[in-house]
Image (cartoon, rainbow, N blue to C red; front, top):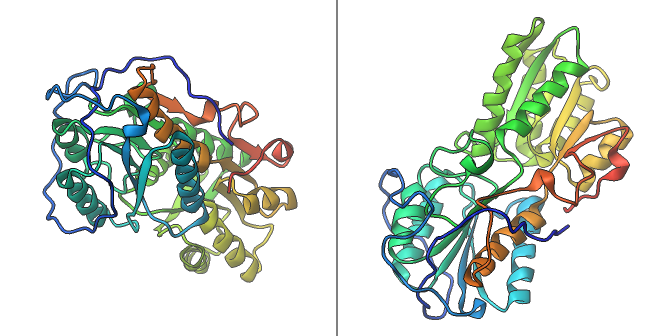
Length: 357
């Protein structure tokens, strides 16, 4: 569900020169390690490049982390719809959860001269830092980042998730949300628990936040993280990871899975091992299946994610910038009017939530 953009906050990233017609690019350039962003503290480019006079001049390259699951597909569909509503050009690039491939795609787009704006869901926010802040700014390309922060800001909070040199950061999976998720497990299991963590790719910012938040378990008596498995977010990988964990840990109490697609496989594994009711499963994702599973008791709870709103906010931020409107440095999806005051859906509250995918 979409919501209007907040108009609070400051931004002064200079807009960009109009470019030629956009076409889909292929990856091909070599990568170099990312450097610290070279931009002013308010995000302004040092080039003085002039921007498009109208929103209709925007030519946006949309870099998706991948296209292989319902979350990403919902985001891409929303981006295309918003681009159509705004009357702007938008091309989608499939990063295939491959940090190097996405780096090459962005680098090729930068050198092509075909785009004057990027909307980026980074697979490795550090690898693409210099491309999105210094190199893009040098060419006058507007950049909005969503879902995953860049330039070492994965575990920052609030406006610190935004990197100077970009228009905005849109997200709802910040470290404080992951900490609240871990706190819920601790509260639900006052006697302690043996916990397993199943995450996405290791370099993914959400995985970094998840692992950082999980350090809290070590501070509480009776809690122990006994297994960690990283996956590609798919159900088969989630199933395989959970099966391996269950075989190695017959006394396991809790599995935390930070994407609903993986959680489907976790539920299958727990049921197949005849451990249903003995192993509590905590989900992060909030898709239609997850909310139904919370109702049925297969999941303890689910943390809502809003892929459609996330991508709409990222695209709309670029357009609002061109129109001269204020765009917040950080657009916090956990404060969305689409949520009932919290992103945490439990058995008592699940009826108040509506999935976007």
